[in-house]
Image (tube, rainbow, N blue to C red; front, side):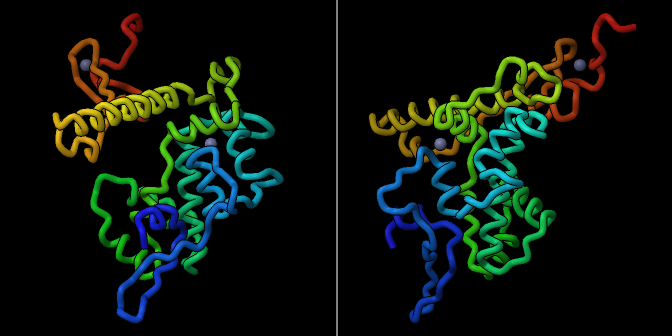
Length: 243
Ligand SMILES: [Zn+2]
Ligand SMILES: [Zn+2]
C-alpha cells in the first residue's frame, strides 16, 4: 500500500492478511471528480459526517455555534475544533463497534493530543482496528478550522459578535497567529533543508509557545494557561488602581 493511499485512509479497518501482516484498508473516499475545499471538508466526507445536528448539516451547525446564530451563543474556534476532532473519534468507534460514550471519547481525545505517551490507549484502539496515528494526523488545528470558516465558507464574525462577552475571539486570534507562525517557520525550514543549511529541518516538529510575563515580578506563564486560570501571576493579579 502506498503512503498516498495510507494518508487517505480514514476510519480504517484493520485487516490481517494471510501472511499475518496487518494493513489498514481505506473504507471511504471522496466521490470521483469531487474536490474538497480543504482538510475539513475532506474529513467530513471521509468520516461520513454529513448527518445533521438538530435540523442542520454539521457544517452549518459549526458556523452557527461559531458566530452565535440561531439558539447558540458565540463560541471560539478552539472548542469547536475539539468538538470536530471528537466526532472523528466517535465515527472511528462506531465503525469498529466500540461503545460510543461521550466521556471515554473525550478522554481518548485528551490522551491522543496530550504530551504523554499513549501506548496503552493506542494498543487498545488497535485491537479494534483503529489507527491512532491516523486519527492524530486527521485531527484539525484551530487555524485550519478558522481558515475553513473564513476562506472556504467566507463567513466572518461581525464586530458585534466579536465584542460580545461570550465570544472567544481573543483565544481564536492567538491560536490563529500560532498557526501562521508554524506555517512560516515550516516554509523556512523546508527552504533551509533544500539549501543544505539545515539537514532534516523540513521534518522537524515545531512548537509555538506564547509566553506572557507579570509586569511586576516577571513570572512567566503560557498565554493559554493564563487565560484559562484568569491571571498571569498569583501575587500581582489585582488591577493596580484597586484598593
Ligand atoms: Zn475548507
Ligand atoms: Zn508577579
